[in-house]
Image 1 (cartoon, protein in one colour):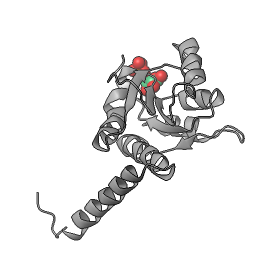
Image 2 (cartoon, rainbow, N blue to C red):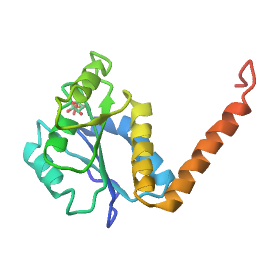
Image 3 (tube, rainbow, N blue to C red):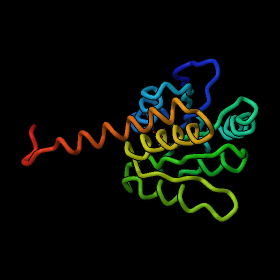
Image 4 (cartoon, rainbow, N blue to C red):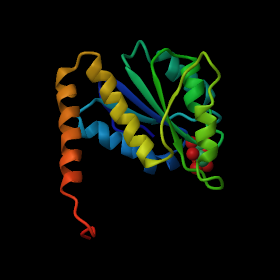
Amino acid sequence: MSKPVVTNPVIGIVMGSSSDWDVMRHAAEMLERFGVAFEARVVSAHRMPDEMFAYAEAAVGRGLKAIIAGAGGAAHLPGMIAAKTTVPVLGVPVPSKYLRGEDSLLSIVQMPKGIPVATFAIGEAGAGNAALFAVALLASAGDAALAEALLKFRAEQSAAARAMTLPPAN
Ligand code: RP5
């Protein structure tokens, strides 16, 4: 699976299975909202280990500025990618069938000192926030238009919260 095809992605979204897409699409949709060039691929740690290492090793040369990696269960993907590249890795725990993603979260967050993975919330919120974090990284690295877009996004959320009434309208 390879979606969408872009010429010069600056953010890579990888996941262990196409079954992760329903969660990881929230990262893709957020990057689309900000107009950030990204790629999305299945790169399974345990089913495609050679491709996983090749992807990580090529990341700097391909110009990726961050890699959002989502996986479920014994979620090795973010940590193993981080082991093979200095590109920042943002880990998204995908909900699992039996342990609701708590296994994914602990697998991703408990990296031993020396190889960091920035770990986000389980599921949709984590995927969306990983993308927002990637936008913030690009903004703080000098992309003024993205910095402005991020402030606008925050202002819109504030306005929506201020407009809330109780009981909530359905
Ligand atoms: C992990 O195993 C994937 O990230 C996915 O969350 C989980 C289940 O994969 P499938 O059996 O649905 O392909 O590697």
